[in-house]
Length: 91
Image (cartoon, rainbow, N blue to C red; front, side, top):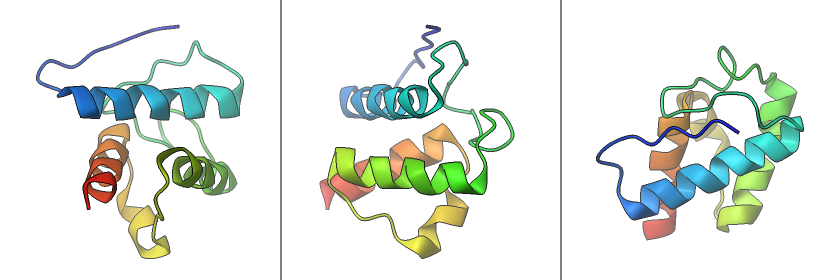
């Protein structure tokens, strides 16, 4: 499993990142894919729109949040998702 930590990421964001990466690895059944803050769900990780629906459901269950349908198109990268989850868990 490749692990890449970004400097300056706080502990909460790091925890969210790690959990999000595990969701993706578990879904794909492959932990050899490189996932970092800038990884794009479709272009880099290779998720389809149907995959994204499943991933969003797992995010909602794991973090106990509701991801609004209108927000999904704006969540293109891992960093976008981490920021979104952090904002939702802090509200």
